[in-house]
Length: 266
Ligand code: ARG
Image (tube, protein in one colour):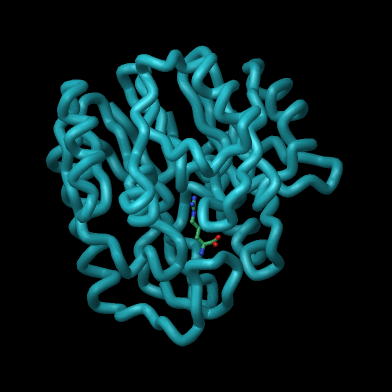
């Protein structure tokens, strides 16, 4: 069973440009964005068997839909994000309030570091990875490691199109990793291959990485990913995963896809 935090796209739009995907001139088509989001929710609930926790959309906060950036939750502990860009810092009180109102112990990061939640901190039960440089600061990870009692391996993100770890790195339930190696520096690539095991590394081709193939949601043996990623689907199916492609191009206009629209709560 997986519980996911989501937020409906009532106010989703492109109001600013804080990553290379966003262009003010490339506006969101609200009806398409809504139907794509509802289709994602339908598949998450009915095909993957997830249960959804919905938070209230807020006018003027177009990126609140990307709940992966609310923070990181493990057990009853929640560490809310501290966004790099002022445009998204306005979301912090809403995510934090959601955690508090739902009974989480909210632990705030001190030291002025940026940290963008489950967009940048992802992992397997025995190895966590923390993306840094684009959005989160490497300095946030020692404290997060202490809070959660886990080792966190910091990995540098070197291509600004893959500005959050979850845009190029997707741990799967069976221990495999779906990822796009050139988004990492050579040290990061080596650290990942070493910790995950070369035989469990599934490398996504560039053309599909650019369609956000790695921004997939894995729930047990189900993987929900954007349409247009046939090679990635083959890699997944060969390992026994059931793939569910969904059109999510309205979210690519903002630099996101399936995984960014969810936050794992367990
Ligand atoms: N427009 C948002 C931003 O630039 C997209 C966030 C996508 N979230 C993610 N976890 N990759 O912050």
